[in-house]
Image 1: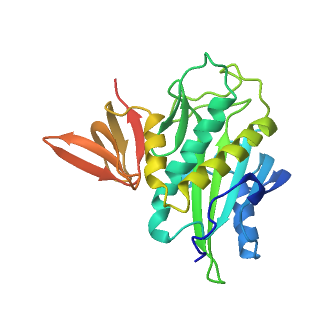
Image 2: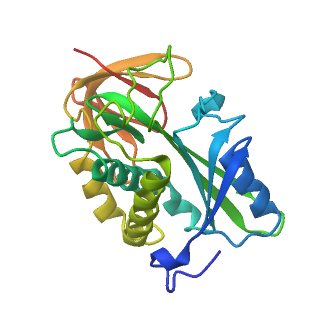
Length: 255
């Protein structure tokens, strides 16, 4: 595992490879990691032919949107990686907010790391990891943002930046994301900055205190969203003083 020394990130620490088309920017990053890439590499594509979301769901990858993946090698000790999705969500929220009109609806993070504008999903984040044959650990942060178009017949209400009054291009948005991610990963500091990241996540969180239903693989649980713990687990108040920590699930807000 890499040393914690000199772990703060800056813009100059990252590289970028822009592709016209690929099956999946996440898969591309993993292939490069297996081939020995040292990490801190962004791969973007104008179009994906095999994009995927969480739990293997397909991710619609029309031209005009942003498809980007960041490859990190040994980004933190394994016991600190649980807080990374929070840091990623903070960075993406920051980038999206920066390209919208001041009068736009709130840009919030829905647990664990969906980015919503006015309670409509505009971004998906997929984080994947793999132990490499040479002993290193590759972690890929995949980010898909609806810039100009959005999918139809989705589980959630969706929107895109164009619908929200932004004229930014995918390339311009990536420049904002590139800068925001470098700043936030520096603050995260290989997991040592979790308190700062958790505080920043809570400032932009969607629905704390509200009634929610969490769909798990085998059941659905309802209660009040009481926030997150310092490792990023959702804390669900199911009544009677019982708080249930949840590591993964699909959250739906209830009226």
